[in-house]
Image (cartoon, rainbow over all chains, first blue to last red; front, side):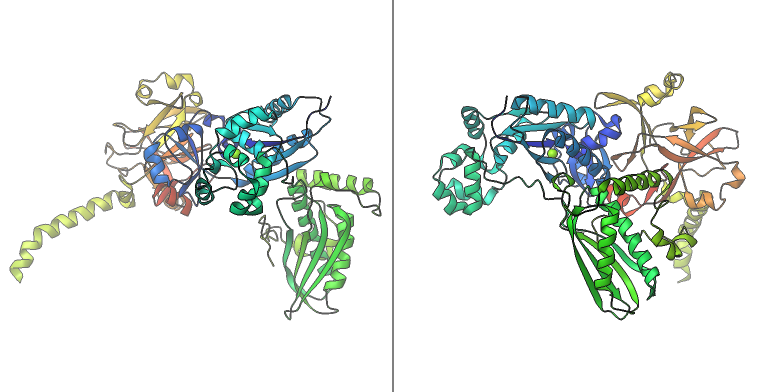
Length: 408
Length: 189
Ligand SMILES: [Mg+2]
């Protein structure tokens, strides 16, 4: 059977609130607000709280006046990220091409060999995410990204709608104000109003060259998209991070190779934890060495293909250290930076890499043992030379493990 | 000059009297009226035998279509649920109505006071106060398990519970404008 080429947009309904309700069903049906800015503002609200007039961005003191029975929670991005990954896993079951647009929004290409109709795909996806992640989502499927997002915006909450018929598209565009289109703000809407472009349909029917002159090439792309021409690419290979990094000061400045190598391997183990957590592979590994006299050396090593394997990254780190470390100089700090990050789904195995089976079995074993027995319970023998890791368990070498921060 | 001082004397006496009452109520004085408003417990979290008690009926409220019981300090006779010897019991909250001459006339005590042994002569016993939500200055916020409390006996042998509090974290202060916060079980704001 086969379906027409289509793009989907999946968006969780009140994601932060839904995520809190996953772990605390007591919150179901109640007006709930998540606070940001150290408890000062409402950054997300449930539909019940919205009905009471609370808006995103309201200070807590206004919110409690509008909604005295609301329950206010502290935000927990780590938890939201966990659920976001689970949702991504489900979307990937439906499509090999998924763009991680934001923590609760994904674009995906509907495979042309799908057994289901587009409408069925939207409904099954919504159902599967509710079943597996327990988060309500809305799915919109259309001929282009812009149309798909417009559909899911209007089908909220808990909607599932596929619209590829031009007549139905026209009706949708006709009831959409032009500023509701992603990328058109108030200022641009005002500009368009001078030319009697008020709705998305007006924009789609306007002269393309006029739109280009008013809104540049970005606006022209939107014009194509609204007319069902998918010109915006799906960034399925772009991970949310540009790079990940681990390292910092080594216990005491040293010129001893075994000691320095031990620290570097520990940083690599931490870096791999990060890669695994974010489910990305590194295309390049940079080893940064800051010497005691202030000199900095960098060793950049291209990997044969993006990877998160310990054995391959260890070799890259060894080569990187050789390039970055000035001979016999005392080292004060070390950093490993993984760049050119990619999703594993889009990674082709390097042709010249040694067989993966043994390395992957080892990595899995290590992960399982450490999950059960504690972090770094099973670790590389190279770290044996750094006695600090063993002498004092209370000494925290993990102070720098704040996700998303580089601590050179 | 002397006459002026003499005129001020009654005020001085009144001031000293006030200081004395503050001293009697101890450092707890400053909490009165300015503290934590209360807690709510979802209906389903309470055992049947407790739900049948009269004191609960007027404390039942509805939020989002679900019943809950609110225990507020401003209630005429404030009480709190506590887990004691494996059972959920309702106990008088502090000494707001000054029934006891021996105990501080508040509903709270500092964690630092407890840790410094300030209650050691009162046969105090740490207990858990189950809660689903806390209320402070009009802000209802989620509580995962409950709040730590101290169970004491007054001179008549009646049980009373004091909520344990600590200086507010920055987050809690911004959210509620309060300078104190309850010590939560297994979490911290
Ligand atoms: Mg959303």
